[in-house]
Length: 462
Image (cartoon, rainbow, N blue to C red):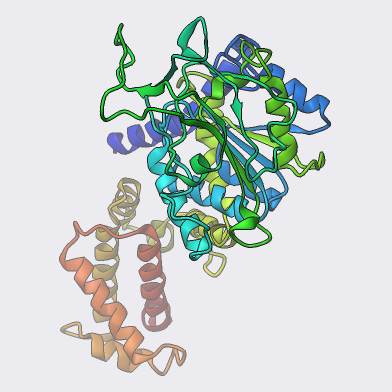
């Protein structure tokens, strides 16, 4: 049918469209424009920070497809999630939690709290692992207040560009703020003071600060439902102190912009960025620093978008624990229907077996039905022909399946009565409803069953 051919062509084009777009975009695009991308050399990119990390002796990598690839490092890596514009998927949250529990380091920098819903699941996982060992009652591991942070007592040019000078040693032992006297932020938010990372804050605003939710307000002022007062903008926790001894470290920063090419040289932002990498990796330069860029604001026509779309599901299935173990079986089952069955002889067409002199109409109809995919009519025609041949060769007035079994059981000892009757019932059900949709594999199975009867009871009599 024409609609089937059209459908197959459409599916073929859709399946190869991402590959074509990837090749085309890769050949025409020479620069990266995504905010916070380590390959973006403009003011809003992380290329300077990437170079600094390389100069420190670390290997720098980027994830464009699925965060699950970080599980391959078994906790021996630093994962950087910066500027996510969408919430994490459930499997990504489990990847972060698994990475932390295996001793890995994680940096999360979010300026608008866009991933707070995903952090809720992470908070539950960490709380379950803590099992009441946390020293104080907190509302989860991490949450961001949202809104834009303004500080009237410490800023550069505008209160929306706060300068943080209240730096305190926390659970990091002062390692993150060593050599740091000021941090310059750009349209940041704050960590929730009720979260564990907020309570463990190492960098705080002045008391005349708040997070304004109305960004476009020309005269901003703190409202009763907005966070205000001295607020944490960076926090760090060594989870081995509250979870298992093998757990890793996590740092949260409420402004990913402080590490961009435009901001990293302001104040002591560069030193702070270097301290974060050193602390999260325990100073081990053999650990790679992996930037998760699949959550950035990547346009649909960018090559990295199609790269991620094409490989993310494959990588997800092949890297996550338990799922990766069954992935080969899923693949085999998926392609099994397209592989030839080595147990059956190859038959180019059913009609080729039954073609007889003077019966060209039969062979033509068989070929037509198979071409159109109407396999139920093929079964019906074969069964009708088998019944006619049996009545003629055996001299029966009427066809009876039980009489067929009485003759067949002695000539085919491997066939059982139940199997014979079950197949006959299925053939008669299909014959009574020739519009029934059946698979070609079932049609071929029934064809060889009837062919066995034909050989044993008809051909041997002729």
